[in-house]
Length: 407
Image (tube, rainbow, N blue to C red; front, side, top):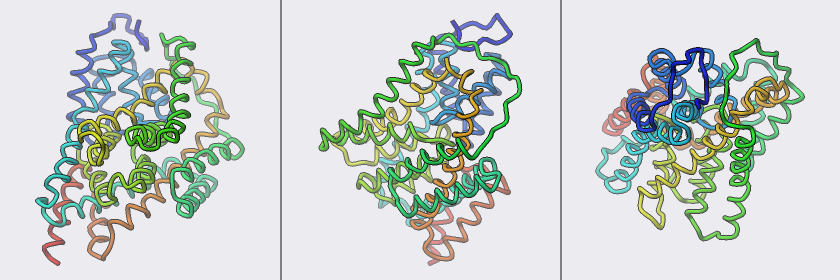
C-alpha cells in the first residue's frame, strides 16, 4: 500500500532495485545543495514519473523541513517508502548517498596517505572556500528565517552565548532555549487549506519509531560513560546526536561536529575544514561529510569502516524521525504552538551558524589580506554570479595554490 496517494489511482509500487537505480542517478547529478536537490526530486517524481501530485510533494517537503535532519534526504526516504516500503526507503537513501560518500572517503584516505603530494596551498584554498560557503548559508538563511527584530535579536543572542561558551552543550542548550522562547514571542498565522497526505503507517507504528529514536538519543551518552574506552561507541553517539539535533539544513552540522570531533582530537581542524570545503564540490547530501570525518579518524578499524559507521549513525535519526512523524503530520502542521517554537529554533540555528562562521571557519582560514580577498571573490561568485558551489570550491583550491606560489 503506497505511503502517499495522489489523484492518479494507476500509480503502482515499484521494486526496491528500481528505486535504488533512480536515486543512484540523482546521487551522481544532484549538485547545488538541498534546495537544488528538492528541485531535482520535483522534476523527477512529480513531473516525469508522476509518483505524486505537486501539492502532495509540497506537503512532504514541508514536513521534512519542519523536522530535524537533512530535508532533501528525508524527502527521498519518504518517496522510497511510498513506492517500495521499508526496503525502498533504504534503497533511496543508499542510491542518493553512495556517490558523494565514496568520493569523500577516497578524499580523506588521499589526504592521510598522500597529503604531502597535494600541491601546497590547495588545502588552504579549500578552507577559504568553506568561509564563502558558510557565509552564503548565513546570508540566505538569515534573510528567510530572521525577518523581524525579535528573530534577529534571538539570532544575535545565540551567537554571543555560543561564542562565550563553546561546545555541544551550549549549542543544544541555546536551541532548546530558543524553542521555549518562541512559544511566548511568536504568533504564526494559520495556514491555508492544503492537500492531505494519506499515510499507510499506523500511528502506533510511528510511535514505536519515535520511541526508538529517543531511546538511542538518551542511552548512547550513558553507554559512552559506562564504556569510555570504546571509540566506536563514542563516534556513534556524536554522529547520532548531530543527525538528531540539526535544524535548518546540512550546513548546521558544521558547529555541532566541530565541537565534538576536533575538540576530542579525532580530526585536525585543518583537515576538518578542508573536508568541509571538498564536500561542497560533490553531488548529493552534505551529511556525507560524516563519511569524510569517519575515514579521516585514527580508529581501531580501517578508514572505510570508520566512514561507514559515521555515515550510518548520522543518517539513522532521519529514517526514525520521518517514519515516526508521518502518521502525525496533519496534527503537527496545524499546531500553532509547535510552529511558534520552530520559529525560535530556526532563528537560533542562524545564530549558531554565524558563530561557526567566525570560529572555527574564519579564524582557521583567514590569516592575511590575500586570504580575505579570495574568500570575498568566492562569496560574490556564489551569491551574485550564482556559480555552482563545486566550481567555486575548485576555483578556490586553484586560487590557494596560486597565492602560495606568489608568496
